[in-house]
Length: 419
Image (tube, rainbow, N blue to C red; front, top):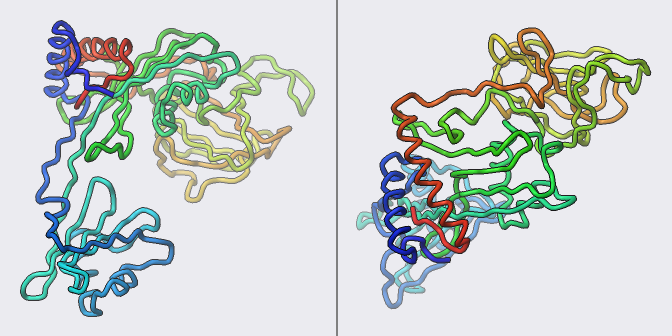
């Protein structure tokens, strides 16, 4: 994969430079440049010996240090220094690494490097007085913006189509969370729809380490082309906005459980599957297996939690002066979720079940606006926040240039933008 800025013709190059200047100025795509306070690994002497240990299940810091020749007195000193100066008190199996450095194979350990993440290293060096000094090193990231696009084919779910397009599963989860504010992934997916995602990839020493944030997403939904852009405002906070600068993150999600199949829609007249007579169905049913976590569709306060004959175990949340949501037929409630609890958007409030008047495990989800039940899949939901005039002007200029860069990447999918 080549850098865009090295192979574009002069016309595109000028556009890209201008786009990158805007990006750097407004930092909607955060450019991560962390200066190191020291080398990640010191220059290796000819006979220097290194041993790298990957923390395994059951390992402790003391066990690993002792096994590598560190004295009992130094073990306690190192443990205290790590806790006090680096905030490290425990090790994570199959994640953390510890590197031991000696001047030669027979010499005592002179340096220990604890590696809790690809982007952070903690160096411990033994001083002349025998004490241990601690230095935290932030590893510089090589961050690149990459573009992937795809098309929904017959029988596809968005997930299947996204994986086929080369979008990593973790990035797709983030895209689901964004698009769920605008789309129903069961009813809004049709063959022939196109989608694209611009997201970060993080490299270190030329090797990809992980994926970063979603920078832009586009989907040809039934209700119109949905576009969202990540943008950092003048106050330093970041959010997602549509192409006009309006908040893309709504106060409520249309579909609390991502990718769940709708089994019964909102209706003023529906034959009840248990009671056998026709009455209003004031919500939407999503099929899911028993025990599936149910996230709150928006931030708010629990105003009811209990059991009744129709809903079974249910939770009701008030989000503001206008909106409430209700979640029914739960198998059980989440721990700590009681009346009066403040919950955040996405927080698990209970688990799918089939309690009450239900023929099988599913989530019954209701949205109540100003005391009246409305269709969760079609109601116009309010945005959390829109941009002010000053930030909006900057966003529109940024979006224009970012779109130009995306167009270039769409024609040259093997390119990337160096951030």
